[in-house]
Amino acid sequence: MMSATDLTAREAAALLHFYADAGVDVFLEDEAVDLTARAETPAPPQTRPAREERKEQHSASAARAAAARPAIGTTTIPDDKAVSDAQFAAESARSLGELKTVLEGFSGCNLKHNARSTITLDAMPESGILAICGFPTGDDDRNGEPLAGRAGSLFERMLAAIGLSRDDVAVTTALPWRTPGDRSPTQSEVDICRPFLKRQIALAEPRHLLVLGNFASRMLIDADKTVFNLRGEWHPVNVDSHAVEALVTFSPTELLAAPANKKPAWHDLLLFRSRLG
Image (cartoon, rainbow, N blue to C red):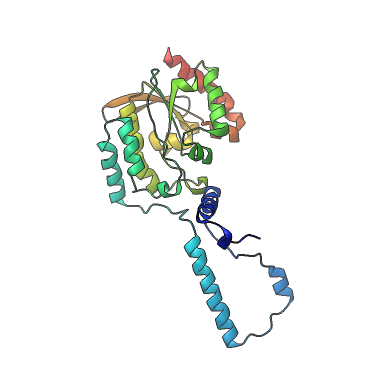
């Protein structure tokens, strides 16, 4: 069996990154322990020096594990200053390109330290259509773009059904960074990332806005309602001096998990297509 000491620095870093992608946030014993065998066979009495030696060995092992543990699973501390820093950073951008640079240099949200990619909008197509989905998945993080993998393939089929292609629609995520293990974002993470989402909308100036999924719709439209309450209707979105109406529907990820919702999603898409003219 290969141990950590047999790995090069690059191999060790790659292994820790794999653990982070898998959502691992706790290191256990180096080898499996048969607790049933322990229960069946009474342990011989230990002398005081032996117990102390075992305690010292356990402490040393825990220290080594803590030193090797990747910084994953950490949530941002609710902090008004972090939110105000995000607002200031977002407002400083005068173009989508500048906002991307700002996001890549922003260190006020711990999600960024665990993610491979920063997902943000690069440019708008001539159609003026912007789609906003939830937070990046593992596929998005690895590919460096939103709606990758199976969800992306389904999204392309959804667009094709109403006569659109992926080139016709700009796509971004409500959060620019993946959460460790795809867990739900904390409220502080949402509050810190919201200024960047609003600034993307203000700079993109979309003429048509499609909001995909429960998380994005609650973050942007109404935090007290779900996608089931909000879907199939147009909602006003006002960001700075830009106003646009948004249609809410299910995200491709949600449709993969619950195919029964494809029928109402189809009606939503038809409603969206009718607005395009």
